[in-house]
Length: 449
Image (cartoon, rainbow, N blue to C red; front, side, top):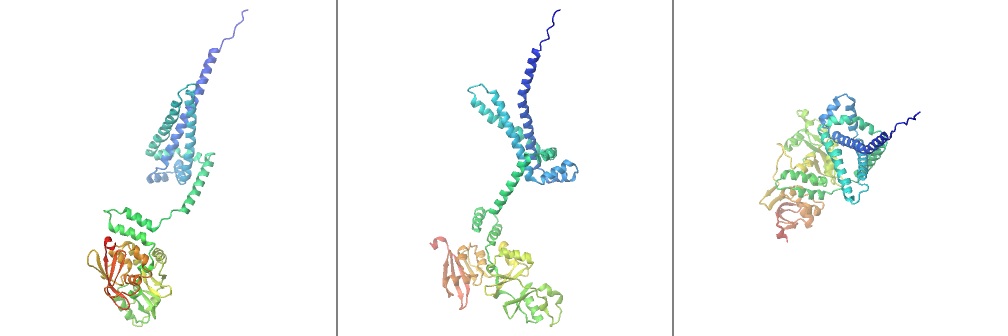
């Protein structure tokens, strides 16, 4: 009996070994391809979610599909969404770099003298691959198809948002960024009004509107202006004694043309109320004995050194348009209105009922004639003068005449003058109590030196 030898399977074994070797060599390439696809999808999702237009968001709200609701939920928490996208994308990119480096390393194993080529391939080839396939191309496509791409990536991102370790790292990133932003807000960046004025001067262009520039300058100076600088002094205020008869009150209102008038008892230092002319309209035909004092509204008192930006807020809060300015001794210095405050920003506001008085005369480009009671604030505006030096030396003076008295130490007589900064102030007329008229001459710099 002839023994039968079993068939040899060595060729099949070689083929099987070759197949296994081939498949094991192919796995890294497959892994890089899958990771590149993931990187492209994640990068595209970032571009898609954050480039959705308001119209596309309205489309999502109008649809009742679950994916649309998921997209809106993710967009409602943009910090968490961005953190998840960045974390996943970085994990994927690091994986691509590691596996790609091992593939490149396997090709150059045993080869000497090719170290430079290997480094160049690992740095530039892998980077180019990541940029093109993992970043640029998917983001361009996702931006053009943002709604479709966002819906497609909604569920995967929702899952990544809750599974570890992505969820843990996301919480750390979001909480850390919140702490940093809070500290940054507390610290802030303080900038002085002087720096703002310097910046404004640098940005001024020859073709820019002078009116717009003046408004910006007014806004910069707004917070540094005291009520005392813009108020109407008591000597110029139209007020009514509470003992006057109804006919006298009507006559004063007609002569003044004001809509609000302070009412005082004994003297203006004791203002007891504000009379609104509109409150009198239903009672114009009343008899002389009409109790008009019953219509008075409660006065609003403020100190002289109050900043006008704070005053504007109080005007808005209390819904009033006029305040009585009091000095440190409790006496009434004058009044200030909402119009006075706004004029510091937009310039003079006049209507058809205002009497525009000529309080100065322009003789030429360098010479002006002013009344002594002209407020310094108005003087700066008329002469187009910076006024910083004046403000630092004005003391308690609020008018041009008061400034001269403050710096000269006396009431100057006719033709006496004071030179300050680039301004020569000549007294045209004065009496024992005050300076009445002043000639202001702008002097060129070389003349002063």
